Image (tube, rainbow, N blue to C red; front, top):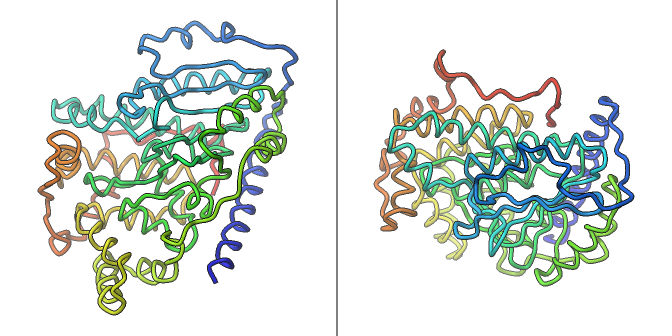
Length: 423
C-alpha cells in the first residue's frame, strides 16, 4: 500500500512539474522573450554598479558560470538567515539576470552547513521591541516580493538545498523550477513553535502536498529528510552531499536555457532514494485521518484516541509537538493552510503579509516575540503563550489575523499584471 502511495505521489509531482513548465513557457511566449546561448565566459563585470556595490559584507555573493549565475547566501554564522538587505540584493540580482539574454538559468545555494534557516527572527525581534515597525514591515515586504519574483521567474532555477532548509529558506527555493536535496538536508516549517504562522509562501505549497501532510508539517513543525522531501515533491532531485561539487561543476558548464537539458544533466549524478521505516510516510493513513478534521481540538482528540488504542510512539511525539506550540498560532496556521488550497500563489502571499503584520503588531497577542525570546534569545524553552490554551483562543482572535489592514496600511503589492501567478 505504501509503494502504491509513493507511486501516486511521484505521478502527482510529475503532473505538477509539467504544469509549471507549461505555465512558465506560456509566460515566455507572451513576453516574446528569447534567450541566447552564451558562447564564451562572461564575468559579473556586466552587472550594473548598484548590483555590484555590496555594502553588506557580501551577505549574498554572486558567481558567473558559462551561461548561468549562482547566488550564494553567505551568513554562515547565523545559518544564512535572511534579512531585508539580502532580500533587496536578491531582488536586484535576479531581476538583472532575468533581463540579460546571455544568461540561461540561475542557481542558489548557501554557505556552510545550511542552505538557509529562514528569516533573521532575532533581528526582527529586536526591531519590534525597539518600536521599529516600519523596518519590520519592510522585512516582510522585501522577502515576499522576492519569493513572488522567484515563483514567476522566466528562467529555470536550481536550488541546492544542502543542509538546514527551514521557514523562509524554503520560501526562497521551493517556488523555483528544480530543488536538489542532499543527504544533509533538513526541512521544516517550525513557525508555530515561535508563536507565528507558516509564511513566505508556505501556506500555498504546504496546502498542495499530498493528503493532509501540509497540515501536519505546518502545525507540528516536524522535520523531513531528503528522501521524504522527494516522496512528497518538495525536492525534485536527490544527491549525496559529497557529490554536490560535481553537480555544480557539470551545471556550470552548461550553455542552455532549457529545463529539460538541466534535468538531464542532474539525472547523471542524482540518485533514487526512499523513506525509511521510521518515516511519517509509513503513517500516512493515520496522519490523513487525524489532520483532516475541522479543528485543532478535534485533531488533538483524534491523536489521543489513536495513542491510547495503539500505543504508537508517533502519535505521542506528534501530540507533544502540538502542545509545545502557541495555541493561537495553531488555530491561525490551520486556517491559513486550508485557505491556501483555494488561492493562487500571489493571493497566498498577500494574505500571509497581512497575517504577518497583524502578528507582529501585538494587538491580539505577543506570542511571536515571546516565542523568539524563549527559543532564540533567552533560550529557556519556556514560552508563556497568550492565550495559554486552545479553549481560550476565540474565533474573533483568529479572524483578526485574516482581516484587512487599516486604511492607512497598504497591502503587499505584487506585479501580477506583468507576472501571472500560478494556481
